[in-house]
Image (cartoon, rainbow over all chains, first blue to last red; front, side):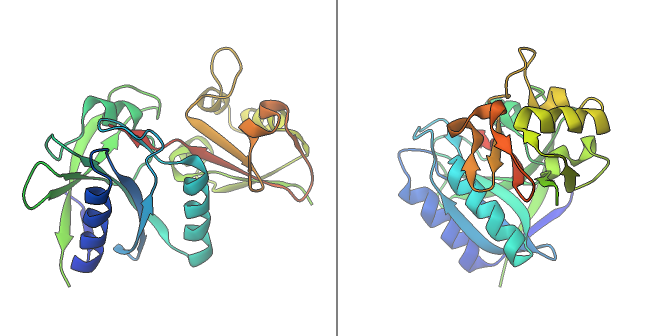
Amino acid sequence: MSELRMSRALASDMVAHLEAERPNEGCGILASKDGDVVKVFRMTNASSSPVRYSLDPKEQFAAYKKLDDEGWELGGVFHSHTHTEAYPSPTDVRMASEDVPYVIVSLADDPPSIRAFRIKKVNWTDAEGEIEEVSVVVDG
Amino acid sequence: MAVSVRIPTVFRKYTEGNAGVELEAGTVRDLVDQLEGRYPGFREQLLTSDGELHRFVNVYVNDEDARYLDKLDTKVTDGDTVSLLPSVAGG
């Protein structure tokens, strides 16, 4: 199982954003450098839904540009499950497009649980894929 | 000077790992054709069977979303940067 490392401060930042987005799912991306998460990009859920999320395309473009400008990598995509477990839903798998860890935070748990997964597909538009858990290490 | 096309990570397996490609000016549709010529099979990752842009693909010409310009008929000229972005979504 590969690893996603982030500090407590960044994990708290990510969770705070997702809690603030309730009752809707919240979302964003993580920037990483040399394997460590270095920044949390809090982003707008363009779907504004308690069961769906989509990154606002304009924000996504700006964030990806910032990653390039700073020499960061796309370290992960995060979103919340407001009432279900921190595990990829069929919708998460069907719509998975990036080959990076998808971090899912379940707000049904107290404290919120944080897990991450890679979703491996043959073609990015495939409805199904293989789910592989990525270890989330929060420290420092 | 050519048109610089930025390829996101998820599409690089279709472009022999290349993150950037230099192509000739024309329209966004012409760029897709050029990409298909260079990397057979790439077109079907970007377009539907009707020849329209897949709704989960965002195309930016410089800082503008091509959907709000002329979509696949959006003109691109030398010096422009075209970025392909997959939609990121789930539930």
